[in-house]
Image (tube, rainbow, N blue to C red; front, side, top):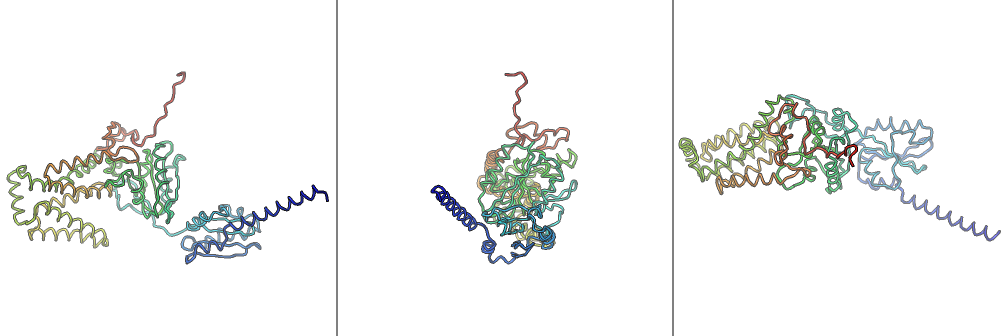
Length: 500
């Protein structure tokens, strides 16, 4: 043998050893069925099968609670048996290949209801989406009930919610970007928008905030919404929240962004403004005059509910001269047996109303309604007869409590209830001056808030005349032709032809 031939043979032997060693190392890093079993220890709903199909051993993994076994047999096992040893991906056209060393992605697919197939002789791992579970049917919205308009609402399955939007917006411009967040729960989030209408900067801002979310898991959209808002310490919601597909569709057509979470029947809408929190989906189904009247009632109800009981405290404590003598006499007679100062009297009755409200919500529906009505009548009457509260205060607190539920947005109602206590305390300390000071602080706080970087008090501050047609009042639809400026995409400047 020539020296050159001998040297060439040695080099080839070394290269062959390296190839064998790299294959063995790669196989040692590959995912095996034993690794899946080890990772899923003590998971009783895991099904692990070892089948012989066309003289080839196939290991199958799926979760019983997330799939329909009969569907797996018809859509996975039967096509493989009829394939006569051909490529499994041809027999299962809807399957996808898993990377041989990506354990995290494989486990994520398994936990989402996919069936995992190991073809060890082929060094091939496939996953097939076989997710199928029972779900709640589409029903009426209980939190945003309307007389006119569609009556369907979102459910807890993201796929069904997306189909409700697709049915209303049959356009390729409707974009859906999916994300997986949560260090433990691995929640699926969808960002939905119309790319030819939505502001690109707002879309990127939402996506960036979702990417930066670090939390163990989300059980509802209101929790995720708090982590995406601009000012999470504010009592006022900066994102809209809806469970109605028609409301979400109207927001998308206006250039807004809708965020949906798998497992939650609510959708977040951003950006939004303070004035929009008092708008109802039914406003556009009613005539413009009726809708405008209802909106003004909601706004005036906000002012009355935060000023009514606090004015009672401030007038009786510091400014009795502001009342007519006849009314002052009636108030004095009704409080003649009350041993507490007005601020303590008001706080006691307000807390009793809150307790009744919480008890009615937590109890079963029929019992809760009875507790709310009977409890209010009995406690109110007994308080007046025992001299713990005046009869006029019972009327004022009842009206204030009713007005706090006028806003269609439930989170805004809760914020108003909290703000009302601040006004009562300020009125008890400084009287009418305390009320005005609290009102100034409230306006300053609202002016400082933003929703996805846009002013929270728009279109009032900064003033946007075209948007005022759909703010405090709802003008006829023929005048509401432009989308809100806060969600409008920036127009690119087009240089005229012939201009240098």
